[in-house]
Length: 287
Image 1: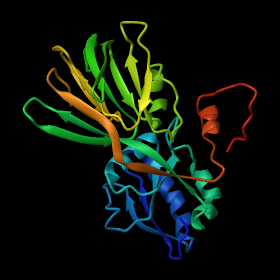
Image 2: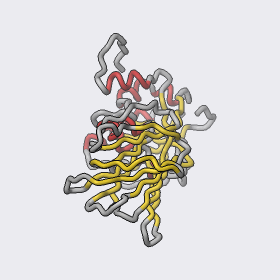
Image 3: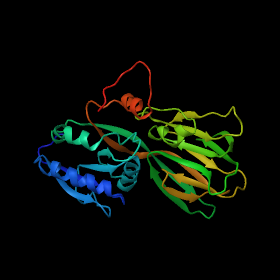
Image 4: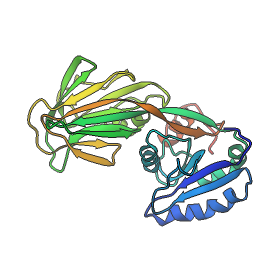
């Protein structure tokens, strides 16, 4: 990201939580003190148009949820994002405010790396021909709503029938999403830069049904083979849509990527080691 002019930054700090606004109050003088950096917009109560502002990058204050929201907001105009974790676990937003302050020279001189993370595009086609379009970074979960019950979900990959899952639902996740809902449901961990998807059943009725990993360039189609009440499609844990018999959900790789800024010393396995509390013989320095 080296360039002759100042690096144009938008700061996304939209949250009802006061500690996030306080974090921006602490960060602002650090950014403003550097002539190599120019803050061109700050989103505290409403979104900013990063395209109109000609921003080069975004700093997102919050947690993984804030990063997911930023990716959806940027749409096809993705810019590099540096996420700062002010929440709890934070697999993606794994930097602290102190980390940024201590490594501000790396950001100012353009020494950060950019990791391209696969996003997904999701269509929900209704029997009346109406089609909803959504994008996301983590996953789409087909699951029950307020009243728990078992139901059937049918999966096709490209033009091939895979199986009908009976249970509490199904998760279609990106590599980034493999450490979110999918991991809680027993799915595998995928490296974040892989080009693949993981399909994880939620509490399957048949114990031989297991998560599968398949190609990132395939099209995944999900339907309900029979009537089922109170089933919803949940997109990145934020967008909820009713999903009924007769609806068809298509899930595939988006034509653009989330662009995540990393400091040169970043280690994916160190993050897993710290966030998941892995023991063993390896020892990492704490940042």
